[in-house]
Image 1 (cartoon, rainbow, N blue to C red):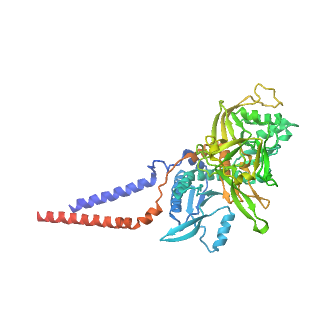
Image 2 (image 1 turned 120 degrees about the vertical axis):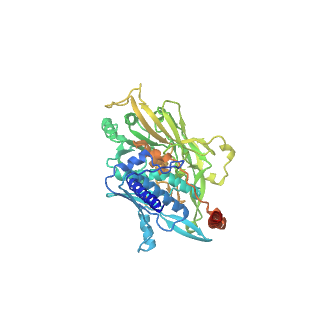
Image 3 (image 1 turned 30 degrees about the horizontal axis):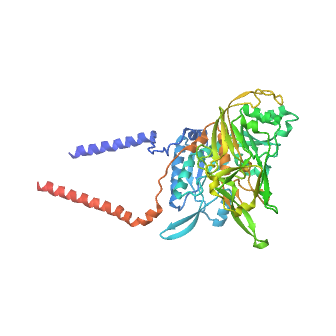
Length: 556
């Protein structure tokens, strides 16, 4: 009997050893979550397949962290394990950026200089409240390149649970995007169009510096078209996308035809257009008022061909961003933020990879866009709030409206006005069946599948300046608020020039269960009793049953 038991035990041990040896050669993972949270997309997997040398990712989330950041750390590690399963060159480690011999203040300043903005969090534990700095970032290092990856996704008015959900939803895209950046060898080219009174370079500095990680950037001046149109067109054709940022002077027919042929030949484009001439600075005069006038750019027929019409009006929105005005004199001056109805705060529709899960945007003296019926597909990416209305021009604008309460009745059933529209489809020349203003080689009447983006606000891309230095796009130096302008525009250009479909990962939805801290505090004793008491009761019952069976067996 003992020999048979020993043989059975030995067989079990041998089977277990063989099973472990076999498991070391066979790797299988099963994602049983409803939202497939732990299954990376095909596009994300492709982004790491090209690495032939170690890619080291430093996750700056080591140390004593509050619950929500611990969850973010866990989700980050689980995601990177998925990437590592696709390519063994993917390595990662946890780093506490505040650990070391250097003074804490010096370390924090150095990290901020590198662009690693900390999150200031409040920790409440056992009735004690403390403030801590956390750096929710990762650094992707490959050969001689390093790319920063933001792990925390803030959103206006978001709860702790929403903030973590938003962050986790973007992790896959953020890392896949970073892997693409460090591996990129041949960059696509972006042309910044000049010659029609567009924004000066200093106002585009932050945006262009950001997209320089992805693309090579150059300038094309259209006012040379009148002298040598073919040369300008040939230069423009070497670029993949044209960026037209707030032109203030009308386009000639020759310039329009060059841009038309660039688009028909497959070039992508982003148009940031102001159809009304007005600036906030023009209100700072003795009267505190000015007149908003229609700006003629000679582009109406151009956009009409694509099914778009930009209206020469202004959006008045009860959901808006403030302006700051000074009151008092000299050293007693105070700067007060005041709601300004002509600067709409625009919340994303979350209906497209470009606008999914982004912060609210700041528009300034925006116009409205009408979408017209034609064969092209049009998607409204951004629109004003339901409590908004269009106002025609010419229109007197005065700072005196700040002292008046808006009449909500005048806003009903007039809102949700389109402000940004992407157009996709096979584009035909706007000069089809028309006399061409100039002759170009390789002129086409009809092109292949293409995309263009129209935004009815030229200032959406404009960064502010402090001490003659550009500030981050979307940051308002007067209120210290940061809006989602840069993320929206970066997503836009990535979508237009993305051949891999990588940006579509942004549409992935996940739901992370978060513990309710308040509920934990209130029910702490209850669950401690359950966790300790229930196992003890179970063991006692099991012991009683064992003794009962034992006595019954030996009595018999």
